[in-house]
Image (cartoon, rainbow, N blue to C red; front, top):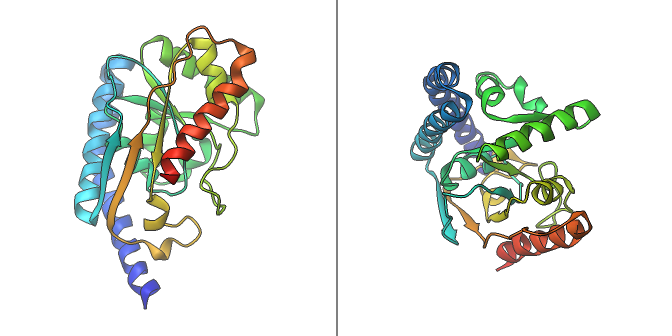
Length: 242
């Protein structure tokens, strides 16, 4: 019975997801088309927030942010855990500034969502060295323009029972190379509301995101990468376990 009700709720939520996206999609495409890249992304991000808030209100999946107050006059490399499809909504609603996320190229296959994804996300095909190099170049460009970026350092959605999987080096190497601070965050309970392994267990409620203190990287060099990665890992793990 629980899974039957969850199935109906999942279907309803999916319909709301795509209907609202259909409404905002033209505005995002127009914004990216008529303004320069930086301005267009900020305007498009506003409409993306409208989509996320609309979905939240109509599906009774609410999102809250807590922890450290973020200085939005600075750019950051946001890094956090990833264990549910709801994480995409959590970061759009809870991060208080426009950002460029790094995302998998496979997401382009999703109808409607793929159109928006292509325009707002720096895509990566991890099987292609050329794609990886191109993605890093795009992220460097965004940081140079004063744009924050977001990378899930676990590399993919965490399907294990561990709170956090080991991190890849990319986000931390980029932080050191560009001297951009790391801003760790933890999405505390998205997996409890929409398990990756069993989406029929979707349930309404409050998903909480907590932001930690920015980790400064000024003066760090390549040899400090492992220490920076470990410090970021412990910061996120600490927020998850608190």
